[in-house]
Image 1 (cartoon, rainbow, N blue to C red):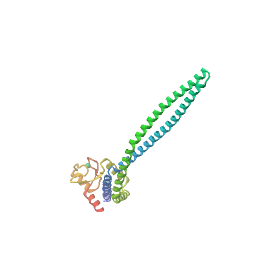
Image 2: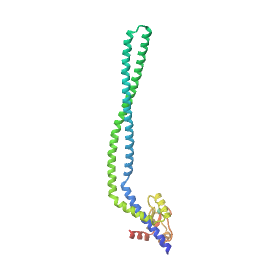
Image 3: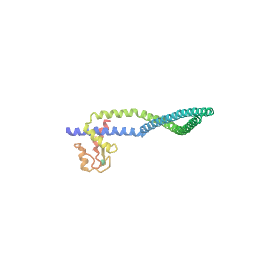
Image 4: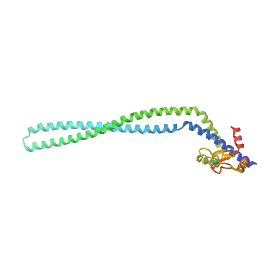
Length: 249
Ligand SMILES: [Zn+2]
């Protein structure tokens, strides 16, 4: 008798836990994929802001380097003018040729710097274009994130009390359910779409609707051994357990 009572208790508690968990599942479903969307949007915005910062640095750096090249070209041009006026004053061919070489050298350097400037300008322009494209994307995502956060907060607030009540019930049950029973329950629940404990209804499993033989239904009513569905492996419970749990809620 005592053992029977024990199994009855165990099954009652497991079925109570099942009902609480189904309620919690339902609440989770109402939130839908909002929590996921919120976290994905936050990540995406973070990445885009980092990219924007990177592009701004490229744009700034190329502008600074470009200005430096610009100044260098100006001073080279001044030098060339100076060399040219000196060429009128020199006395020997050797001196004249030396100045001509300096002029050539400076002109080559100017050409090189101008090419560099072009490249930098191109780089800066591309970076600025990319920033322009990025800005509306960031703005759209930020708007959406704000909306989704508001939605999620509303859903959370609406069901806050309910969720707390179920969580509390869950904790209370867990303190009374043995570790091995809970492990068995969790394993089946994870494998079987959230349903681990099901009543037998009209001689069939409440989970997969497979027929349960009259012999097993009879066994089940005795509450003397733990019986699982032969097809889906879910824990089966009799009407009496369903009644006990119903009355305890
Ligand atoms: Zn089944």
